[in-house]
Image (cartoon, rainbow over all chains, first blue to last red; front, side):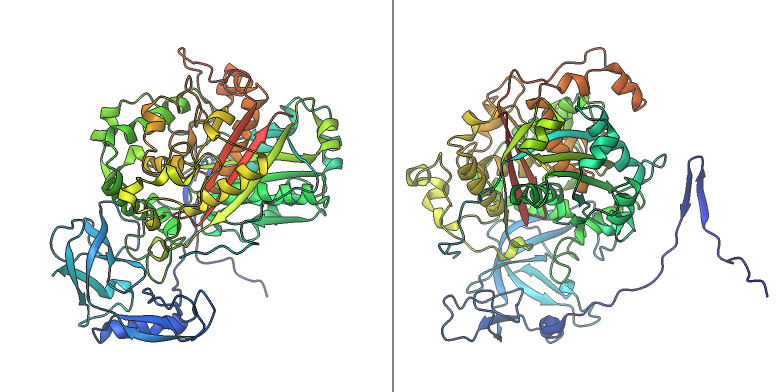
Length: 157
Length: 456
């Protein structure tokens, strides 16, 4: 029994030199593992950070993005609610985002400083014009969450 | 706080001296359907072996090789896993051992570091480093997405899917702290594109004015298109050897005095502060006034600790006391104008907060104290990522060997790539340079290498 030639042909984009188009359609699974609690927290309007529980650990910093294990001693960390207000540390409005960007071009990206948190969380400003030192408060996408970092945004406080 | 333990700042040593003997490039293009990746790498190797005045023929050279290092940033782009195996076979090096190195934008620098480690340890004595990237098989928008997959996919990539935006956040903060005129930044783009104008390898050469750059469309404020690096297709090859082998291969070997690496968090957000790590040309007094005395807030978003760390190790390894005095030529990873200024400070060309003076003083220009990116850099000539760090060292090698004109000025070199040598072509050969430096840089500063080459 002869085996048939493939039925799905690759589109020829150019013949000299030869360039063809390979189609790819599939999804990737994204495993949050021990960080999933953070994204589940956003659904409940909670900003969840982590702190090391090792009594011998030197720094005991509050990490947001959270880390399940402490970068200083590799010990387990505990979940702590972070304040939902902060100030804009820096900002930039992205005119030409890359493919996959789910927000509108012209969305201001911001880095937010939150009291007691040791990082400057990257996020976006949902309303208003960004400025250095501007006070902002967290808002959450609870209606139709994407379960990504985009479910957290900030508005002027 | 980052606190160093006694082992953390150990200055690296090579057990045996490491030499660079030859380099080869392709030209760089936005699209290169005429040649596949295997062919581009072959073209780079052929130039390295056949056009660098080596004292052996290609067949003899092939018989001397005993290890190979491959350098590609993203399997996403090439859509070919284990591409190194395919290229290694195509170059005729089977069954010799090889490795493929991946550290983002610094892949080329790290690949040369890996090759140097092989030579320095005595594991090998003749090692080609072959770097490439093929970025023309997806649209530019998808390409930006692929590159942004080298940001943290859990907490940052979604915010723009665009690396320029992550750099723009740092740029804005840097500007908030230091208020560098946009004109100064624009001058970097103008300078490097002009240098690219004299290079047959260049993808985006041009005679632009500062005004052209300032009026150019914005990608993510404050960065304009003309201030951002290109996406390229192309390859670069560098050949390393130990002392004895180097002298068998060439009369003009150049010593790799140092190549060292540093790192910092992939997420800029997670960078913790520390006192500034001082370079040999700095003291505590240098930073008394820095950022209103807030020296402890370093590196923040304005500085790359990875670059400072790499320079700290490499300068101490090579005995560099003052980079502007001790180097005669420099290649930086000018992915964006602003990150170039940040790097000037990280590698000690000026103290923190004063990086712009390196441009405004004229030091960075061809007739200045430390001509920088005479190759055209990433803004003017190429950023075929896996090839980039290798390309920088090839251009540096040719400068140190006095071969700039041979590779950039020969009209045949231009016709080879379907171009015409400009009537107003100018030689950018630095007069009798003794020592050069190249900075290879990844992420928003996740990996940086600092390489120092000098004439023996």
